[in-house]
Image (cartoon, rainbow, N blue to C red):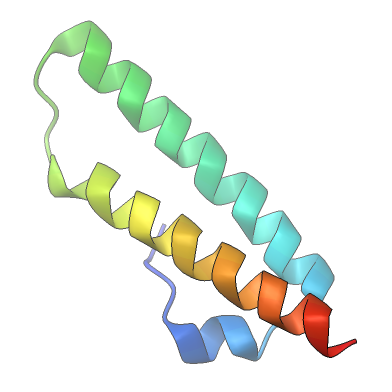
Length: 68
């Protein structure tokens, strides 16, 4: 999954953002469990970037919900 930029998230509807959040959390869970089982993953920066993207999505989602 490509990393989402703030502008891309702002252009989405609230329902789309919530769906994307579920996808990102599932991908993070998969990567964390894979790294715990194997010890070494192909791209260790991926977990960090996923966490940052989830935080970005949550921040924008909260701001959008406060607007309404």
